[in-house]
Length: 184
Image (cartoon, one colour):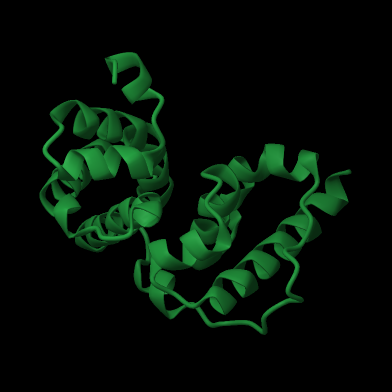
């Protein structure tokens, strides 16, 4: 496999090859994860320098613990889980956000099985408007719509039930729509 085809490989393939000792696969895996994980961490910490520091810690943890991953299709969700945990730890240490709200945010009733529809205009404004939402809804919406994780991946990344993911999506989207409506 050439280095160019390795760079375009899916994350599960890279993770499997990295576990077998392929250094180029590990480097490619880390390069593919680095940007999205940085954006996720920065969204939690709201500080670029702190996010860069936490990202370095996260990448080291991923390198050290990649051998423990058994189901390679979940490597992306696992990497986001590591990033979320480290960002929350950093937030607690630095008191930048109320990290406890990420864990203790009340569950709302789950919506219908179908995920609520999101219009393109709302999605374009999502990153900017997330800051007005409770931290639990912010993180779930960021992972789902900005980082394009599936609902099961979000649940795995945050270690919360799928029903909680769905309720936070429904609550967050409803709040965004309410806030959006008066302006348009």
